[in-house]
Amino acid sequence: MTDTQALPPAFQDIAENLSYLDDWEDRYRYLIELGQALPRLDDTEKSDVNKVQGCVSQVWLAAHSDVSDGKTILTYRGESDAMIVQGLVAILLALYSGRPAAEIAETDAIALFDKMGLREHLTTQRSNGLIAMVNRIRSEGKALS
Image (cartoon, rainbow, N blue to C red; front, side, top):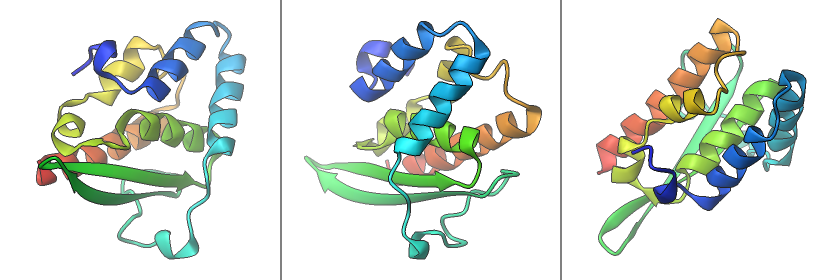
């Protein structure tokens, strides 16, 4: 699913804001601001279970599921020890958190990041870490849908 009409408003706002920023330094600053605005995880959430494998930085994603109207809704919290990666986590949370598991499984964040031009200036390691985060979130969505 890459139809922006079906995407969460918070993600649409981020995509729109990024569209106004042509300079990569400005985009990096915006990513850092997004990351700084994220609430920090509790130390108990920074566990091996929540740690994302495949990221050079430390990244934790904590998922919580609820059932509403017969659908499993996944809510995510996340944190990284790297500022740029923390911003990427913030964008992924805006895209995936609070959505039905089936929609999460179908939403290709990598295609959306590419459409926004967000991966073109990431290092290979950051890009691989982003893919690892997306794969983790989508596989949890698939498992619960």
